[in-house]
Length: 227
Image (cartoon, rainbow, N blue to C red):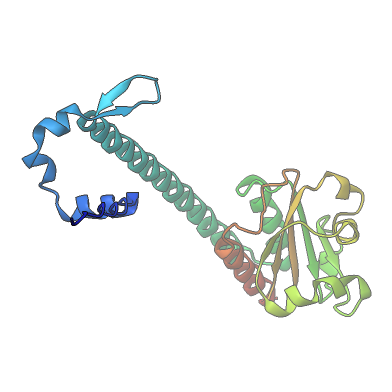
């Protein structure tokens, strides 16, 4: 008498395999519309909804995400447009300044009135008689020891934003150092260093774009080199 051995159980399909099969057979639910109507999915509100309703919800969520992202991009574009306009005005001010003193005056005025900088320090390596009377300007020796911590920054010529060491903050801002939460450092093509300070720790951060700061640095360096 021959006995029949039980058939081995077929391995269960994984979720990935099921998803892949459904993607390859998009007409499955067209041929099984009764199944589509019978399927019920759990909902965040605790009730069950049909697959079609869930698809509508997913599409609506995607649309909301897309609209939110679009609104964010529009806001960024408008902010950049406003900033570009301010930089354009900044450049025109420097071009119209007839003397070095007036150039420095326009730099401070523009940062305070147009670019909303709470603290400004301009370190210049080439002393000039007109610089001494400007409150935010300091003439320094390029070789002095206190500048050693900024050597890589000055060599790179690229702006840097974020935090600095306590000793650097004290060197840059003196008695106001304790109020500074974040800084932007902008090299001036070998002529010096522009330093912007903010009370807000997130105002200047390492992840922010520095293209506008680089443009400001170039405009300042060009204006100062005229004299």
